[in-house]
Image (cartoon, rainbow, N blue to C red; front, side, top):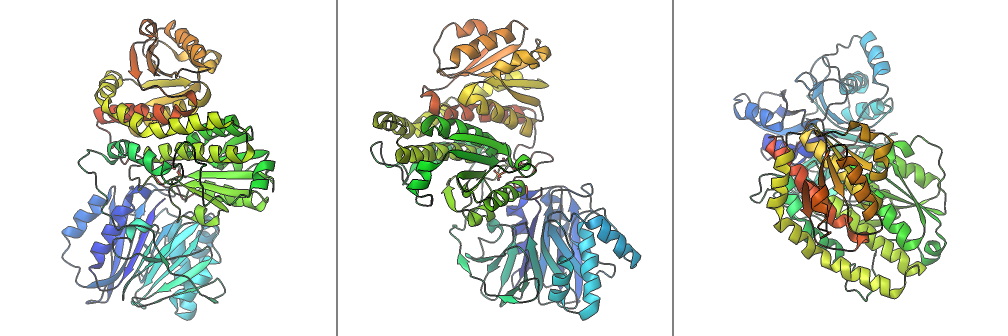
Length: 615
Ligand code: G6P
């Protein structure tokens, strides 16, 4: 989290920095700041504001001191060390204020460095780990008055993760950037250059970019840039053409990005399926999967690692892959995988699932898995991300840019990618007969229209949500393939409405959670017709007997449901295997409308960030 930008060139620097930060706001919104070198008076100026980026924009709009800045750096913060405040907002400086720095990441040994620096006379003004880097570089700068060397020598002493941009008053024609375990790229322009945590910050200015790797240091001037390693050896870097269209990100008339992204899902389904699933009789094509057929035939185990919403898509993926291929699949939160004994090896396929491809825990987990010899496949919305670049195989999910912090369309795209990948494996391993495969593909092709049908009934879901908006707690239950839908539905609700919502396996209700049930506790029951339908119905009745309010999310026409349930959200019929691709949509709308009724900041919920680049 945290987003950083840098610019050097002849455009209005403040505008470029603010535009860049606007497109990085998904990475955090606790505070923001920019620092520019004003060529007219030879001073570095710093502007900071607590809270959303608009607060900084207001300050800059009313500032009359800025004259002709042609170089600057900016930051948007998701607080790790130190509360959100102006003093903890970046950029940070050294004692004399000649050096300014913005940072994304966490410096793990900052307390140790801080005490050494304090002994050298450095005075700290904030509680951040970042300020340590500013003082450390300033100390190194005293030795040889060269910013690139000072940054290079300083980062050798840092433990943890960092993407940095540094400016110095004595070298006003360059910015130095460095990275380790946090994304950073240089946008290459015509007599102007950009630095950013992510592509959206630069794409409206240039389509040419150079991605920095770990332990690389870049010196960026307006007309060139140079990259070296930690020993100062120059590295020849490739400038890539970004496969992105310059696009203005807007809500297209929707009140929130989340609602727009929910409504984009029929097209997302079409995009995911296009080119890969041509028709029900043709084999699935996954060009970027580099597993050879012998490896697939001998594959006995798959491990899927992910975080947050992607972890829930992974849980659906486990069901799909196990049912279609009979390969054993384990799913684990990346943050847990990292700290346990590894049992993966060259016979294991490890799948990382990540919308952003930059989640720190998942990156670390896949790197560890790679060291065990496992083949790494990444299912991601960002084929240009760190994870994608480190993987052996890729399944790009093609959901398009997702702005809302709460993931919706990317979840749908990930779930669909699992169907495609499982069918792909099954076609090679011969684990399903051709009739089953044709039927499944045929049903998959129906999904876009079925998702559209759900969206046409949005008002009914909205009405149902209005009845439950004042509740303090919520339980979501299901079994089987839709258990992950229960987890994801509950996560959506708590993320954006702050209601305490928890997903449970319906059969586990009686082993503890049932103690919480009374007339104040609503239970969302996801019960699609299939092998566990009757079992879930019994579990719902157990909840009813404890006076809980019950909502059914189902495609069943069973009239008996009206005796048990207070509300019924009806969705179209689909085979049980594909049902998670439908159940997620009303659950997203239900959470959205509750948060909207409560007047919450739907797109930027408190304390969250879309891309979590710290462990
Ligand atoms: C953050 C976001 C979640 C997301 C999770 C994993 O917590 O707020 O919406 O699911 O990160 O992100 P990834 O990009 O790896 O899918």
